[in-house]
Length: 169
Image (cartoon, rainbow, N blue to C red; front, side, top):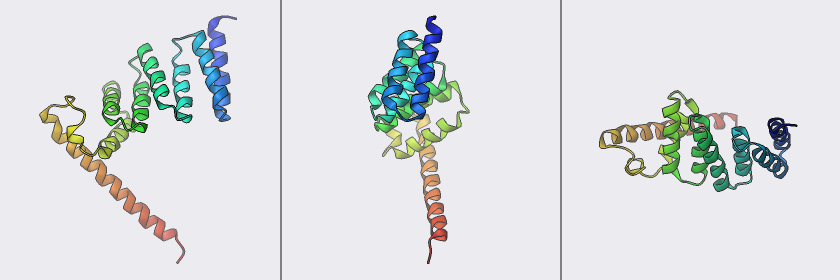
């Protein structure tokens, strides 16, 4: 067998283990796929996903960074890294990743939403990230965070109303 089929075989086996939530076996298979072909982005991505399942966020970030080194023009790679950084409350770094996603794909709806929610999570979105935004860009960030926060509050109130309708009296 050549290296490519071995790589794909290990990757497919890893996907089967992942679906069965056997993360240790899946991780082993994705690592073997990477050993066969270090430039095989799907193996890096799914290794990162498995490491997230195992709550090893730092190692997951390293996997996404490796995939980005292979092809920095894939928006979802940047999104995965940004979302994982949010799990670690590293919001400034996450926003940089989300900005890169939107630079590559301005219509990436999930990223647009996640970015707005990240801004709403940060205690002082105007101050973050330092040096990233000019004075003329601060007001839009503040407005974006305010809108996202308002939407979250509206959704929470709507959820409470819906929940009260379903609760027995």
